Length: 269
Image (cartoon, rainbow, N blue to C red; front, side, top):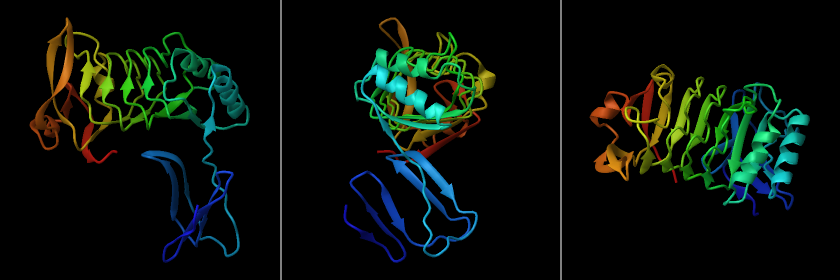
């Protein structure tokens, strides 16, 4: 709420949730608005800013509680031509809320929506499953608060290119299966991964060609995961050995799968 001064910039806000950044910006300077690790909006100046001229950057987050509010809010954003949709959900958002999200994106053009879901802690099983169609609209999804992703949560989101879940620790089998255009995935420190590539549907499914196109980003705290049979299911659990700079890391392998690249060293909170 108080003005924060730097040598060249000042930042303040008002009671309506607007933030004001005062200063001058050279050509190609970039301003990014974030919620935790999630980028809400970015702007690159193609020319230097002019004195006494203001610029507006829309990083609006929509708050919605009931399923109907969620559905209505998303539909309004789409109707207004928005493609970056940022939604604040209850921490315990479940099946009804995710059903509303699926229904809201029906008939929206494929591969056009960058969706950010703030607040919710879990994507339930089949939460954003696209096996029956309707969610082709998703181009990227950012989940800054999610710690668990359920079985088949994003199954068949065929036009999804990027998943950012920097605090997720538990993922169930098939969560990202059949996402054929997936190119970048950011995950937190994984401690509980169900399923595997050999003995059941792994979290990325069976299509090794699709997996080999993915750039994977892991927490610097990630440990090497080993496969165990627990209660009749194959599961991956962490060892004491750091993954970073391990043989698996150098061979671009994780959870028994080979990726296009694996970055390990980003620090997530």
